[in-house]
Image (tube, rainbow, N blue to C red; front, side):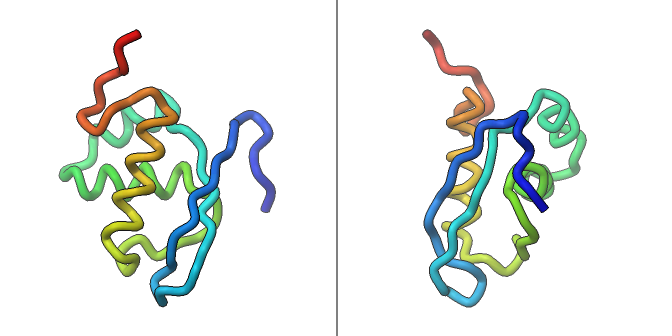
Length: 91
């Protein structure tokens, strides 16, 4: 599996489900993915969907330490031009 060259990729150093050091490679979210996330029944489900779309590779999001998922979603929102409340940054 290779990184999609249409996107700019970023990385975050954190731990995996076994608390071992891990590098997460991710990209920003697309408008289509953001709209699809908005159809999920809960915020938790929406964030899980977003992470499954934008983070490279297979990860067990349900068993990661909570801080890892939170930091990843914050970084995705940041590079996508969204705050945590999903409002665009003012220029």
